[in-house]
Each structure stands twice: as structure tokens, then as C-alpha cells.
Length: 431
Image 1: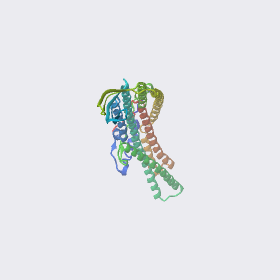
Image 2: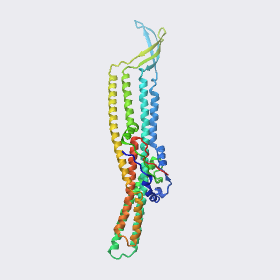
Image 3: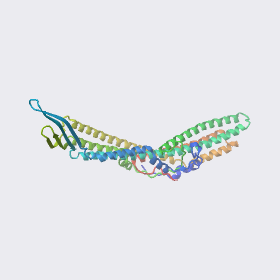
Image 4: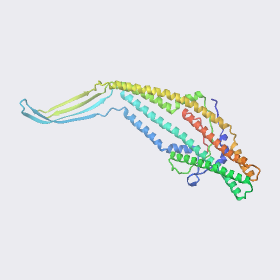
């Protein structure tokens, strides 16, 4: 893949004028101050409520890591009973209370606690990777939604601009006394075009509302809060060759790194299962006293060891080995999917960027000027109705095509950045 870059002026200079008449606010018709995409993304990442879920997952994993290398708590045992003593003839000799107390501590086999600590540490690493992956995906989603809000506003502004021309022209026709069939038919063409534009305007407004609601939810604001995204400027750094993209993806891709950590964790789990074939030893002092007859006190040291006769330890090793083989297969599958997605995304990004470069810097402005020129000359009779309608629709089609191309290029660039972890700056927002 050859390095390529996109000048800022290629994408958004022709639409800066258009954006100045775009929607400035949606909630209750109130204008809102323009917010740069960088500021908006930072607000979303810091205020998103779902992020707290992943942060608490890290806290839970760290708490588990702190106790993983600790011995189990000692056990305190207390026995209390009544003893009655009789001789061989059945005569009562005496009765009284007997009791015993003991404290037992279980000591693990050497190396077992360190293995549990290693497994817990990998759980912390997985939780941290999960947070990083979420933040990365949230940032990309925020950028996509913010650009979608900008694009929807720009489309709606262009549609209203053309719709106002048709409405004004229709009022002019209706104010006249139509003489002949041609003026009547032209009026019907204008009315039909206006109806079609009203539908497109409704769809654009719904798109604006949907993007606005989701953005407000992501940043923790009221769903009906007004928001206007400043006109963005897209710049693209050179994308590395395919070999470098694949190498970077294997080092920085969050999903693939999580699979590797899970494989390492399963390796420790196998070692732990083998270690647990050797039972722990419970040791502790005890004290017992018998007050029946002569007072008798016993002080000693107890020792207990479980007998591994059920085969549970061997079965646990087999289960751990099976889980490790599953993790190995998951790593291979994740690697294949990662390579495929990187190559596909890189090709999509290059294709969309090539498509965007076919647009002349002033293409949209030329279509807009042509639409305005056709409106003026049609009123004087110098332009036929077919040419007039075609130019108005061509202007709208050009605006939509350019914005859609920009959005698709942005999405492809963000996808490639998510996969590879390379900060080649698929979108830079300048105030």
C-alpha cells in the first residue's frame, strides 16, 4: 500500500459556507454554541456512565489479586460436652464437663500461592485491556456520531435552501393567472418537486434527532439538549505498508492481546491444577480438659491431610488442559480474523480516499451557484423547467454524495485505527 494523505481543503472547504446556514440547534429551536469534535469526544469518554462499569471491573480484579497470594484464614474449633463416668458394676463415679479447643491453619503446597497470584494478575490485565478497548471504541463511535450530526445538519440546510426556492416559485405561479397548459403543468412539476423535498427534509431532520439523542446519552446530558458540531477539517497521515499494519495489529489490537493474556492465564491454570494434586497440610495446636473424676488436661499439635482417593485432582488437570487448548485455538482464530479485517479495512480506506479525491475542491459550490443561477433565469423564462429541476436535484445529490463519501472515509479510517492501534490521525478536528 502506498502512503497517502488528504489535504484539509479537499474535503470541507466547499461545505464551510453551506454549514453556516445549517441547523444551529435542535432542542426547542434554540441555537447552541459550536463544539469542536475533540472537546465533544473528551466529554463523552469522561462522562459516559458505562465506563464506570469497566472501571469497577478493574477494582474487583485488583482486590482479587491482593488476596490471591494470602493463606486461608485459620479455623477455630471448640467442642463442649457432658461426661458421666461409671464403674464396671454400673455405679456412678462422677460426672462433669469436658471441652476442647483447637486452632488449625492450612498450609498450601509450595508454588501454589504464586500461581494463584499470577492468574489474578492476568485477570487485572484483562480488565485493563477491556477498559482500553471500550474507550477506543467509544471514541470512534463518538467521532462517527458527531460527524453524522454535522452531515445531517448540512444536508438539512441544503434541502431547506432548495425547498425555499420551490416554495417561492410556487407562490409566484399561483399568484399569476395561468394562461395555457404549459404554466399549469410547470406549476404541477414545482409542487411535486416540493413534496419530494419535504420528504427528504423530514428524513434529514429525523437523522439529526437520532444522532443528537445518542450523542447526548453518551456524554451524559439531557436527551433534548441542543448541540452543534463545529465544521470539521479532515486530514490523513500516511498509512504504513501492509506488513507494518499487520505487525502493529498483532502488538496493539485489544481483542488479540486479550486472547494472548487468556492463553497465558490458562497456562498458569494448568500448572495450578497439577500443583493441587498434592494436598495442603492443616496444622494447629489443641487443648482439651476432662473434669470428670481426676482433672485431665491434654495439650498437643494436630495434623491433617486430605486423602486424594476420588480422582478429582486428575480430572481438574484434564479440564485445565482442555481449556488451554481452547485458548490456543481462540488465539489462532483471532489472528486469522485480525489479519483479514486489517487487510479489508485498509483496502476500504484506500478506496474511499481515492473516491474522495475525485471531487474537485469547489464542486459543491459550483453546483450551488448553478442552482441559484437556474432559479434566477427560470423566472425570466431563459431556462426550461426540466433544466431548472435537474440542477436543483443535482445540487442536493452532490451535497449528499460528498458528505456520504466523507463519512464512509472517516468510518474506514477509524476502523483501521482501532484494529492496528496506530495513531495515523484518521481525523483531526481544527476549531
